Image (cartoon, rainbow, N blue to C red; front, side):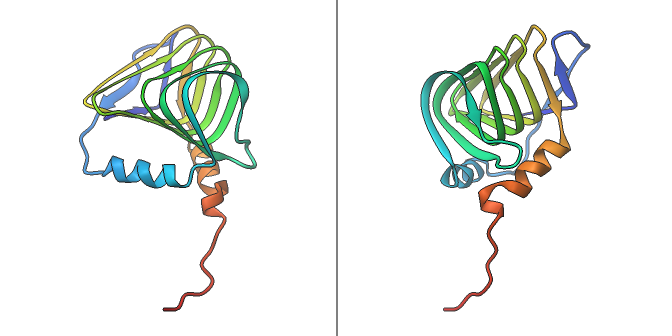
Length: 161
């Protein structure tokens, strides 16, 4: 697993990227997130569009290798079961989790940006950020996703058996 902290910027110095080993059951965690997905999209290339807003972030699940390009924006949580390529002016605010059975490749090129967190899970992970692409840790973007996702808007008011 690879955790990205602070920032990666194609023009800056060495990024704060490091692999960690932990006891998190990522398969169970991603299964729970996928179960609550607002959008499920197949593998392919997507140009333009929106995956959630700041006031209504969404959970998006991409089943397979995806390429997001053009003018695309997202808020919330995105789970990708495969390789991820971001280009154009794709900007995502929240958490992106990219995972697979063996190796994962994530390419971020052009003006693409992630504001929140990026988690890569696999036996081998490879990340490339070029051009003016950026990955920034943002507690505000993560907190917004947590507070406004539809799964966070429900409260158990009573329970009986």
